[in-house]
Length: 73
Image (cartoon, rainbow, N blue to C red):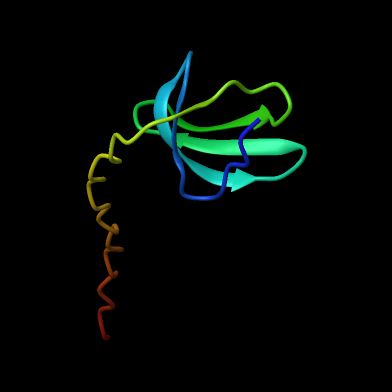
């Protein structure tokens, strides 16, 4: 079994390519390119290394709150 580290690019048979977010003796968390973040049991998850780069993520725009205009009496 390979010692995976945070940031490694991997492929999992069901979800495809992703980036390791967290790895410890109990859980492995992977942010998949097309399926979002998933958590697996470390001793059961089957992973393969990949050299496929992570896709560029679209920047998320922050919503702006409309300021209520106060009328002066």
